[in-house]
Length: 164
Image 1 (cartoon, rainbow, N blue to C red):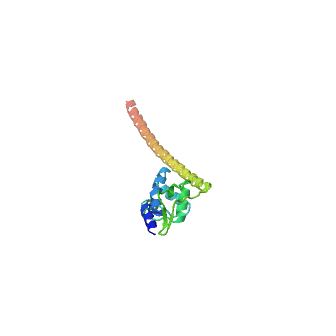
Image 2: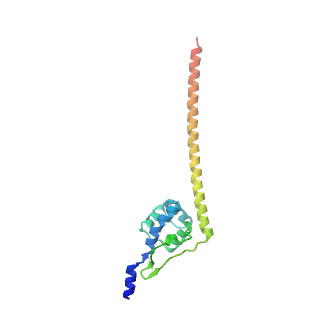
Image 3: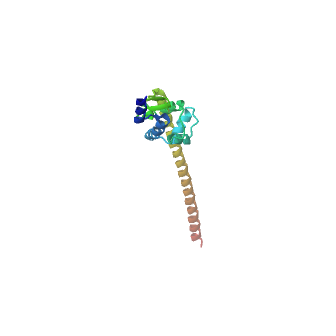
């Protein structure tokens, strides 16, 4: 019994919530996702996540349900289990530790999440392009009005100069 206590003190287990909090941000950053984009991906899988939800998990203020943890693995395309990477045992409950977790992903599900992210980025780029084009059109129309005003002013001045 004393040996068990010493082993736990020497290599204490880490609660799964802490492991996820520590790994989620670094994995999300490496995937190039903002908290909002990750929340959007989770929403598409049926979870009521907001940007704040991701922030709460990353700071350890919110626990992750099993279904959410599995979905995170899919959304982040975590085929190697980085989300659950830990130097020591992971505590799933006060009496249950595991040495490591590996979540097997269905390739199609992770590819679908990646394709949706790509599509959403393309949509944002297209929206930005349309906005820039609209602004450029408005600037061009305003410039054309100024040119027309200048032409009218020149025509008036030329007409006055021709009068005897």
